[in-house]
Amino acid sequence: MTTTASRRTLLRVGAVAAAGAATSTVALRADARPTAAAPTPRTDPFTLGVASGDPSPDGFVLWTRLAVEPLAADGLGGMPDRTFVVGWQVARDEDFRQVVRSGVVPARAASAHAVHVEVGGLLPGREYFYRFRLGRFVTRTGRATTAPAPWQSPTSLTMAFASCSNLPSGYFTAYGHLADERPDLVLHLGDYQYEGAGDGIGRHHAGPETTTLAGYRQRLAQYKTDPDLQAAHAAAPWLAIWDDHEVDNNYADDVPEKVSETPGFLDRRAAAYRAYYENMPLRRTSVPRGPDLQLFRRVGWGSLATFHMLDTRQYRSDQACGDGYKDCPEAADPPRSLPGHAQERWLLDGFRRSRARWDLLGQQVFFGRRDNDPGAATTVSMDAWDGYPASRERVTRGWVDAGVRNPVVLTGDVHAHWASDLFLEGDDSRVVGSELVTSSITSGGDGYDEADGTHPWAAWNPNLRFWTNLRGYVSTTITRDELTARFRCVPVVTTPGAEAFTRATFVLGDRERGLVQVQDAPMASAVARGTARSDADKVADTVREETHGGS
Image 1 (cartoon, rainbow, N blue to C red):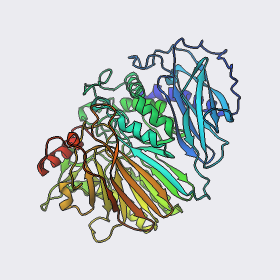
Image 2 (tube, helix red, strand yellow):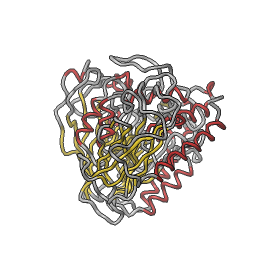
Image 3 (cartoon, rainbow, N blue to C red):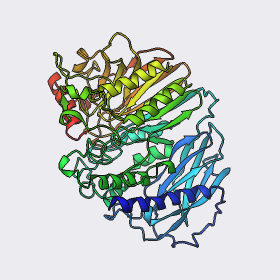
Image 4 (cartoon, rainbow, N blue to C red):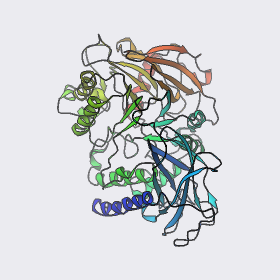
């Protein structure tokens, strides 16, 4: 697949999305039939579930994709090269007695029979339900919420965020527990899928390492057959952002992990971006153009919160000193940027304009300092913000100078729960923000726990407040007065059905700086602790996960 051909094809994808929006007021009759398109498949084409995303005060995006054979090697889900007309409905009730919007949208082979519908004309701050239909086949019912109007101040917002679901590493049990909470909003902070080949405990990836459009489509379809992931999508609207494994481990802009693979990498990136758009509930502003896709964006939740969703892969400077954990002076060069200078300016402008009670940065890699050397050397991850300290200083200084009321960074990537205070560069005397880091859904396999909830690095990194190597997600409740974060965990992922529990709870008060721990759950069971680990083992586990493709 060449980049030039991709651009022409993607223009057609944009036309499909626009057509879906244009038909948003067309009524869907109970007996609607795709008379102008292909015959209805003989088996259920809705094997990949449904999703909603990017809520606004008057609507949201709806998504589904037709696939009768999700693991088909050509990435087309066993569907013929024909256009199908899919009906959709939005209602105020789960029984669809009060349908408020409905329409039809084409599902075309050029977009792997994925459909995106941008629903508008709804009331702000409301719960809605939706479904799709093709002939006699009807999807499960999905739940979505609209954002409050900009001038509204909701009593509370429930939001969960997650990251890093590697299918061969274990079962997506945590997604199922997240779905049970039925939050108002879900943030997915990257590594939604993994590109590598290989087997795991009980599950394996179909196909080789993903490098082609067919491969990425097949891999994403395989993930979307998981019932727990489907439940999480159906439970609430998502704000999704990618990290590296949606394309290639630790890539930076147009530089792949293995420099020898640089020729042709932009074609691979174009294929991955196209498949990502096809399979996520994104607005048509994110229709890719060859190897480029506009993903960073801002979403408001009334006057209570603003979500600044960052893309820390597509525009970044290459990792310094060959990546990994290094003591690398060149990492501090001022011109280097992790989000890219244009995105930095966009973010700083958002800080200056914000009037929200809470400003939350949804992003991918560890923001605060994590020096793994207690001596004079500063040995940090070149792939995280530690590898771009001048860029981090511009962002942190930006929210301080703008007088942002409550800045909170939300992070994924590192396969462990962390809570961290944030400082300006070189000044540990004043806390200026907070960081909440979610563990993986499965990446890294079964985790382990420690009674004191601390990592060895905390002894010389005063910002690091809490850590556990268990898998899970973070569940939050945000009010005008405080943000409460619950670190949700499952003891194992290599067997399905594990119960979830809250390992620790932190509260951040309005205008306060510094997280306060208010609850400690008992340490997880022996099966979660596994073999006792020394401090050296814990450090080695962390570095290995974050350097060799695990993160």
